[in-house]
Length: 259
Image (tube, rainbow, N blue to C red; front, side):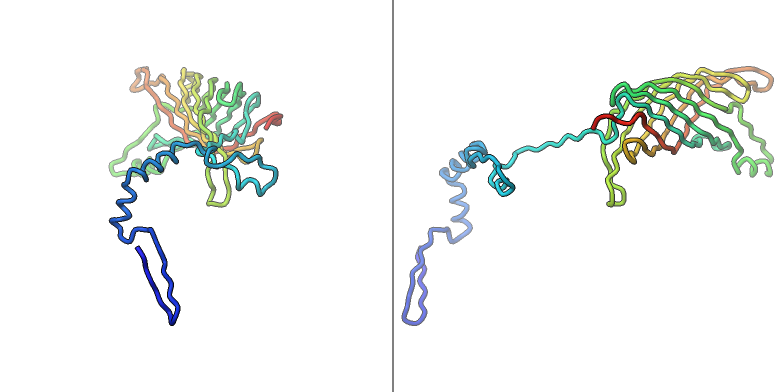
């Protein structure tokens, strides 16, 4: 196709081989020659399209062939292998509508690897009445509530598993590394009736690292046991489930000698 334009006494002719309509462009795109050329370019390796260049200075980086796939694997920010973790947290119960338990949880762990640790646990608690009990007692009708089973403390030993770690943002201002762990333990629960009951303990914690020696944490733990109670003069076993939510802090020692 040829186009001509004139200005005064001079004239020029401009030749163009580009298609003038969308239908012509589509015909070019669908042509066998175009497809063959595209397939040849897509199947050829990156190294054949761009010569390999050894970077000698910063400007040479622009000449390097781009990576087709990039994966970045980072180490854990808070190293744990062959270190102790000492934790303390305050907790309260979640599943008793009439009585509130407040307590202190202590934990000492030793990490055999980054993922696995052995630990000792202890929980000390006291129980108080909620406002709903006073409302029921004042009535009408006047109703008196009582706790058949009340835990004074738990002591046990178990294992901890740390399968998840990562980073989160805090108010879009800082990056906070974290670990998510799970633990299982066996121990004894001391009740207010002076009985020691075998107990299964399950828990999970999310630990937010402040530095390589200290971290903040929240915990959810569940203690399940068969408690001995006396109801209407008869002694019997009653299944008890204690669910606790805690907030606390962890300290790691000795000083990390790696990373």
